[in-house]
Image (cartoon, rainbow, N blue to C red; front, side, top):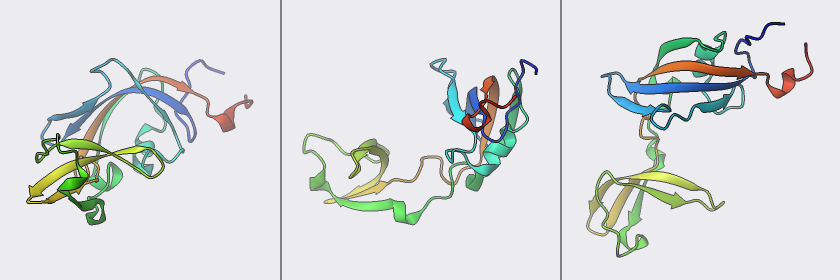
Length: 155
């Protein structure tokens, strides 16, 4: 058995990534705070095409790949745009177009919403991912690869 593990169907992967838009502008990066991301292949948190781009890579590998909107953050869903009364927001909060606010879910978790417009007493809030509808370029550097739970005990 070698020390170098190859990313498989349920590997745990630690990686740095730089996420850019098609025009080259930076959207996100784990390098800003030097905190690599940890992902588990096959757990449903990544799209199938994103996982396919990682399969076969190993520790130390660097790769860039382009994902269209459906393979990255999806297309915007009109059902994720909500109209709320301005009175639902604190009176001390100056609501402005482009603001991102955290909204509490019934289960206690929070979800970000982008203020798209404020008209009179109506506030339009978009709960789509900010990168929905965008083609994105991921530059990844694999820091480490570990066995997934179903591989534990296999030699």
